[in-house]
Image (cartoon, rainbow, N blue to C red; front, side, top):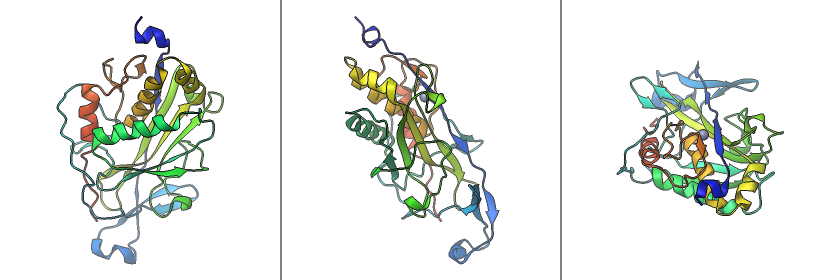
Length: 267
Ligand SMILES: [Zn+2]
């Protein structure tokens, strides 16, 4: 019996992300080193918010990953002439967990999935614990509870009734927002969201051999958070439907290495 029929689970994925257009704001005293360059801001909630300066030096956290495989990959956001929109590899990607509705036993596979994404991208990930914020794509990108920078990636759970995006066989949705840096036109990904279907994931985790596939779903959603789009090749984990792939495919690995080798924001 093949794994696909044994699991008898077809996993599909919705994808979501946002493109946030920056506007210009007056120059403040913190902007002297960029004197003459207007600081970017974004409209959020009830007003205009200055885009945060990046924290720490513009130095990579770990070595660039050189993939030894090639295959299908695609990116959700591309800037003509500049390539895909990516996270800044010189700053760690912080993430928080919204634990409401989480299946028991899911925490280890969440962390294992992040480890797999870190290895494939050469990016550093920092788990900042649980949050009371709900995992929702309508979230503000900058929230006082997380300090002055962009909000961390949030990973959470919902039922199909709570989140219609998870209807039918959709087991997760994931994505990040593409936002201008503090200055200039270069865009970066920030404040990703992953929402996992708690009912589908409980069924999957409880099925024989299903934990591997459940972890692969979380890896897939992190792929979206890192900027990867779906591909049609069924051998890749970034295919929209999956009933058997539990490892990164050759194109996934190539795409994730590119996702982890974007420009650093240097202000
Ligand atoms: Zn997907």
